Each structure stands twice: as structure tokens, then as C-alpha cells.
Amino acid sequence: MTSAPLARRSFLAGATAAGLTAGLTAALSGTAEAAVRGSAPRQRRGPHHERDTTPLWQQAAAKGIVFGSSIATWQLDDDYQAVHAREAALLWPEDDLLWYQLKPTPRSKLDFKTGDEIFALADANKQLKIGAFLVWDEGFGDGWSDDDLWGLNRKQAEKLLYGVVTEEVAHYQGRLEAWVVANEVTDPNDADRFGFRTNVPWYDTIGRGYVAECFHLAEAGDPGALRVINEFGFETVNQYGDKPEPRRKAFLKAIDKLLADGVSVQAAGIQGHLLADRFAQRFHPKGYRAFLKELADRGLQILITELDVLDDGLPKNIKIRDRGVADVYRRYLDVVLDEPAVKVVNAFGLTDRYTWLDEDQPREDGAHRRPLAFDQKLRPKRAFDAISQAFAGAPVRPQLWPLAR
Image 1 (spheres, rainbow, N blue to C red):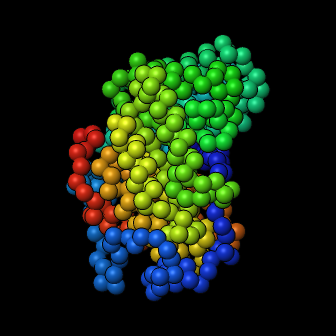
Image 2 (image 1 turned 90 degrees about the vertical axis):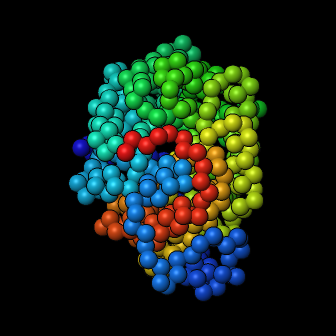
């Protein structure tokens, strides 16, 4: 086991519980649906509902969907390992391949210890595996200064980035189902005319071509692994007032540029970090369905990669909060799973015991976050039921990969 990681990022935040209205509370408790605008979820948990305790991966697989979850070596207590093995058919390394683990200083050789450990766990549990991420502008840790990244000339930056990508892909060649090649490389504002972010060190030192080159290196080094571009912020207005539509357009524009240049982008990763605050009002199913179809029409598989619910905008009361979180899962997945190109649903963890949101986005009222399917004592919650019910209502589709179990 390793020590707990550095704070991962801080772009997700929502309104505080003080902003919750009586109408929203009533709606989330199921007594005043009219108080919340938005399409009603397909299924609801009635008073006599009996929980389907079939592992989520099996419920998903019945519809051709691969269900998985992130996990990290620092989270490997015995109880949680058992839950993860039981519920998830796919393992996403939460931070064991980030540079603070892989290459903690500019002078460090690559260290695959934690990555090897987490993937060995997946193999022991007969889980599929995804590598994340080959290129990102975060996750470096304290061993890297700004000058270590932004101060490089083009030749130095190419040697550093492409050297790490090449060695990492070679180390895991033939062992993974997919690589998330590029993470968070698009933006509608701080971007070039093709939608690629310019406020990252790799763009500053190498130029836009670094994204394409990382895809080329992944294809050359591990041609059998699916190649994914991954992004966030497509669902609702975020805490800064950024609207999802421009983010969707920037993502599509960047993908179009890559495809036009012959880059082998094969799948779109949608992180799915959902904001509970006024989700039913802010989430527009029609527009989201159209976005998913645009991705599918480009021949891309779609993976939901980091699914969780930030419970801001919901009160401290656990029963009401859990209903609200479940409502968000249900509304979102009912829309997403109608798209046949969506082949993977990957939760960003399964238990509230280990959620990055407690560290990066603590609630103002001091309560622990409750964003995931199981609580801190590993008991299934209403969020589990919502995910289960969404799988039950989803249409069948061809499965992306044969399962390992």
C-alpha cells in the first residue's frame, strides 16, 4: 500500500446546501415532482422496492455494458477489495499511473510499482483494465516545479513526454483493453481555433501536435488497445457559470481535427462528474442525446469514465441527500444508456470511504460526501439502486470487449 495521494484537482464545485429550496427538497423526497423541471426518470424506487443484489457488473453485462470502477493502491483495505472485485468487471487505476507515482521528479526513472500492483489485482479478480492517462497537465506532484515543465524548449519537452509515453505503453503492451491517451486537452475559451487547450505546458512547449503524436505512439506501441480522448463538463452549468454546450462543441471540434489528420481516435471518454445542485433543471436530455449521437456518428465508442455525484445543493440530512444523489444518477443514466454507442460505465470509486471529493471539495457543513454507490461502511445506498434500475431499463447492445470472468 502507498500513502494517500495529493489532491487530484479542484474544478468541480457546486452551490452550498444553503441554496437548497423547499421545492427542491420536496421534489427529491418524491412528494412534489412538479417542483423540479426536467424529464422524469424512467424508473423509481417505490416503498416496496426490493434491492437487486446481483453484482452491478452482471446487471450491466446483461445489456452489453461493461461496468467498472476506479481504485488505487492506497485504498486496498481487505473489505473494499472484496466489494470492488464483486461489483466491477473493469478496473481503472485512479492515480497509480499519474506522474507523481510514475516519475516523481524530472530525474526519476519510470517506476511502475504501483501500476503493476493495481493491475495485478485486476488480473487476480479477472477484471478488464484501462490505462489512465498517457498525457495530462496535472498529477505531477511536488517533485515538479513550473519551470521543470514550462521552462523546456520544444526538443526537451518532446524527449520528456514522448519518452515517458513510449516506455509506459511498451511496459503494458498487450495487457490492457484501452488507453486514455489524452485527458482534458480541450476547452472553448483558453484554446486554439480547433478547440485544443493552449494553457498547458505541452501545448506551450511542443504545440498542438503533442496530442496527435501521443495517439500515434499508443497505436504503434499497443495497437490492440482502444485509444480514448477523455474530457469533462458536458452535463450542466458549472460553478463558474460555464455552459456545457460550448464545451461539447470544443470537444467535437478537436476530435474532428484529429480524425481529419488521420489520428486514430477510437473512443470518447465522458468523465461524468455530475453536480447535484439543481440537476433536474440544468440537465437537458434532448441536447445531451444529440451530443452523444454526434460522437457515435463519428464512429466513436463512448465510455463514461469517472462517474460520481457531487452532493452540493443537497442538505446535510442523509436520507434526503441520498435520494437526491440517486435521482441524479437515475436521470443521467436513463439518457446516457439509451445511446447504443455507450459501451462502458465506470464509476469513480464505489464507496464513500474513498472519494476524492472529501479532500478536494469538502462540504461547507463538514459532512462527509456521499457521491457513490456504497457508503463508508460498504453498505449499498439508493445510488446503487438507481444504477441498477438504469441498467435494467437500458436497451441491449453489442459488448465492446469480452469479459475476463
